[in-house]
Amino acid sequence: MESNAAPMAVSYAITLVAGQSDRARAREAAGMAAQTGMAQTGTGPDARQFHDGAGPETVITVSGLVKRYGDVEAVRGIDFTVARGETFGFLGPNGAGKSTTIKILCTLANATAGTAIVAGHDAATERDAVRRNIGLVFQDTTLDTYLTAEQNLRFHAELYGVPRAAVLPRMRQVLEMVGLWDRKDSLVSTYSGGMQRRLEIARGLLHAPHVLFLDEPTVGLDPQTRSSIWAYINDLKKREDITIFLTTHYMDEAEHCDRIAIIDHGKIVAIDTPEALKASIGKDRVQIHTADDQRAIAELTAKFGIEAAVHDGAVTFSVASGEQFVPRLFTEFSVPIQSVSVSRPSLDDVFMSYTGSTIRDAEGGAGNEFMRNMAKMRSGGRR
Image 1 (cartoon, one colour):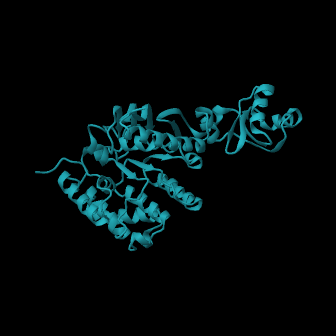
Image 2 (cartoon, rainbow, N blue to C red):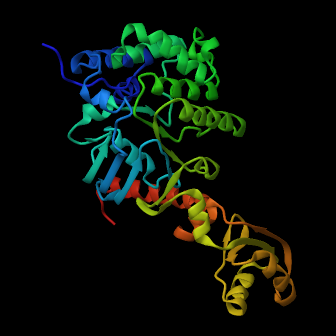
Image 3 (cartoon, rainbow, N blue to C red):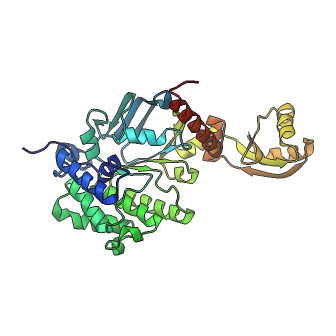
């Protein structure tokens, strides 16, 4: 009897058996594929609907999404939509709920409440249909390093049921797109970190998904390699009819997105285009180094009615026209100023405006909150 189960990404199968040796997890992933029918062609009505350009305008719809781990609420009732062909970014510090959300959307975790519709299918009740239409690049590599790039991609193609005659042309297309065709016969263990990320992106594209999920795609890479990865991502948007959903805590990466959702402590606090978000601030960012930061903060409030705080080692505040305010500061301020800088609104300013801290400060707080939550969970929820 022909199986109706949908094909599923090799990376997903591997994730389910993470922690085993590479060879063992590859065998188990292959076994899972056989048991669930992942080796079927995957060219049923659902796959055709979202690969022929006739898909719905809204490809992701999230409503009232909640995820709890015991008493810890990682995602707190979020709502958003993603349009077809959009590059949509989830911007927030580590521990904000980004990866938890992406796992729910990719059927790797169950929501506690709410709904998530991906490519027209419910991520909770139509898991196979969702998997058939998505590609996923994890934050941590899931490549089999003892195999060559070509072997990794052929294994992925087999699990997805890509027609055999189409595998080599499609493989060449995606590997050339990320500049790795000439290294297809090299063992992945010989690849640099940046090359492995590019290979994972190529693998995620091999079966022509409707939505590509990138979970922190450049984390841990040097600035030059991060820039190269984004050049490849922007290039693939020109070549492929694809929607990209990515999570990041890098402000410069968020600038590449068509729209951004800022998430903090499991809640979406703002959502719009990067330019619209920056325009919503309407103020310049001023940072001063002084001989007495606390006295400077108090004087800014008392004399100018300005709220300030120490961020990134400097007294930081926002004013409408920074270049006009700075001369007044030097004239009327009693606290000695050692240095001053003025900058136009950035996404970091947007984040600080909506959350009260910079993303760097928030990451420090998220780490402390994570440790407190872990201790709470170990103690059975006792306070």
